[in-house]
Length: 311
Image (cartoon, rainbow, N blue to C red; front, side):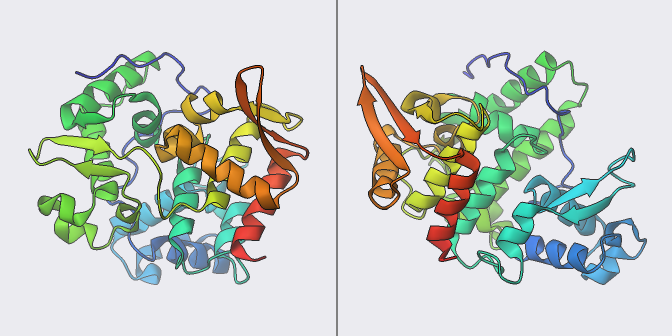
């Protein structure tokens, strides 16, 4: 049975459900959307956008949605609705996919972890994803559990999204993260789903239950994880110089929740990065284990990413 969620619904943005046109992100979509907007910021306002992108109309809408959800592009609204606004390349988008970016063609699995982190950072345009990764505290669940939890999440926020849309999000999320071999009914679609490589969700043998795979992630580099820890710390204050291990593991929106980590996996990553980064220390003070840092966490996060990507 699904656990009752807390009432800490993000109030910094509207809840957004089922904007993906039933498509999860395919290989090449984020790069395609990035290049298209970089060449023509008005492309998604044009009637033939799908023709220019070489996809169907609904796929073109999905590409725009996912590029925005992963924060590769951002709407320059200036008082306009999102459908009327011309998207611009975000700082993160250029940093990752630009000509001299970290990983322009997303060849490194680490970049998928980085994108997964940015997808779930506030403001989040994939509310079902945010809720399921952060508010569902049980590791084993069914589709029915997810639906009940999302209904609670919706109702607490006084949102009127219909259940059919919530079900579409659940289907999309599972197709996005469940490996092909774990779910034979999804095999054709998962051939095009890069995020299944992360191994975050596994389908169990009875074909009804799913499992969050909690613990160390072999394809998640220490630097990507520690960068996320620093990103999370800056959400409290840019002047903050410490954050507890407990917050990093269990707080809503934390790396521990987003990446489904064990305490040992998180501790090991921080300790490994602290060996070469003098600005980061890991200590146990009066029984409180915490990560300390001597610089603005946002700047230090960038430094750690630069180190990993060799920039």
